[in-house]
Image (tube, rainbow, N blue to C red):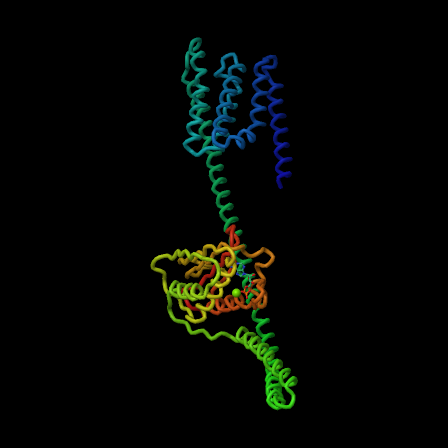
Length: 418
Ligand SMILES: Nc1ncnc2c1ncn2[C@@H]1O[C@H](COP(=O)(O)OP(=O)(O)O)[C@@H](O)[C@H]1O
Ligand SMILES: [Mg+2]
């Protein structure tokens, strides 16, 4: 597009020069100063956009002033009696330029100045001639037309500027809506993925659980039967049974994760739940010192929440933040404020730590089950958080606009939804 504008501007420049050359070829022909002034006008015209973009504030004033000066010089060299010069419309250049760049008052002021410059030629004329009524009328008409032209162009330019700002605002709104849409789509994809994984693991876990029961029962019977006759076999049977217990515990966790949550909501203060969760995690903490900095807005509305589920979600998030800062210690910022999201009002929580943060390629995946970077991690924490937030019709996302650490942002709507 810029290339297109570029060629068009060049074209217009050439046209300008051709028109000025036309003026140069018309009488008075052997007036060197006139040709020079026309050349100067051409140069100012060509340099105008560059001057205005380099000096956005004084640029337009400089250009208009230069044009008034050049127009005055041209008039001075194109008539026996300068005020009668046929080149007087050259004052339209500065007048129209002012109308394009300035508001109404600015335009009027510059037009007045241009008119004054033109009228200044009255003084030498009056030394030799007298001002007739027709002469004065003619002068008044010319000046009035300066003002009319200025007003017509100014109105058009102002309207144009208004439209441009409107389109800019619209474009910004559109871009913001687009970003929101992308975010919502990503969240929807995540929920779907979690739901599918949940179903799959539920089916699998269920199928595994029954044979596990049989294996465990048999191993325990063997253990008892062989206790006296074959101690080695009995010990091995004991291993079978204890390992089955481990697998069984894991399966139970699978099932807990996959089972549809049953929420029992009632209006609660999010900050109370958050404080409880912060305390729970801090009590069991054994790593380096972690400072919690709270930033709670006053008079927050209550939100329909399930107390146990939400506390569990907060504990998971806070535990992750503590884990992330375990080696070095750090600060956990917990902020809660009223907010709007997609046209819904509610409460927004931000939990930000000063740990190493989450690498870009992992940001979407951390919400998937069994994604973990910890030696003893299971990777269910964040997927459970995500599920709980979904269940409250809220949203959760990783905010990566902050430089350091990880920042989770959760929104809970104030109104219950169907
Ligand atoms: N605050 C955090 N800072 C850095 N990494 C985090 C943070 N929270 C979560 N993660 C990353 O996300 C992974 C998944 O977290 P989670 O689902 O809670 O499972 P787990 O804690 O069992 O690993 C973690 O292993 C860790 O890599
Ligand atoms: Mg975790």
